[in-house]
Image (tube, rainbow, N blue to C red; front, side, top):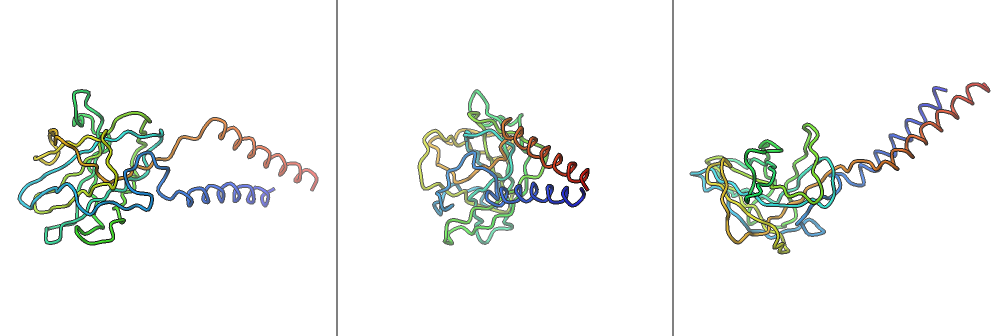
Length: 223
């Protein structure tokens, strides 16, 4: 029985690992990156070394799931203090812009892996989320924001495609408040989620597991 149980567990775990490897960052809920991950090597400048600035861009997920990672094309401007920026997620303010009183993902310090002005432009910085479950709902507007501390400066690069529905708000006080930037650029980023299993999938999984256990019990009884 023990050997059969080990085989069953190995198969189930192996199958799960295969699925994870096929989608290492999670399923794409929203993206403005090209199919090969590329983007434009220029965009919104955040910070100039003497101030703490930020930008927030709206997005609407196409699928519901738990946040797993974010890929964002934010490049460090060489010569400034650090490569770090702070990434956060906020709910939508019905009156316009991000709702700063409803921060879904508190600012996370991320180190940029890109250098402004240095090709190739397909190396978006990856942030992997590992906090409490954070579910994003399809069809709901959210805001992805990035801010920098005084002494550093980065560029949030643009997408190769224009998305008129995307809105941009800017902050001059480190994200405490935001105001409309007017004509929005299309920021380059991708939000990945882990979709909730469909009921049918869970039912089939449970049935398969029960079947394997039943076979194991019968073999033990015969032995």
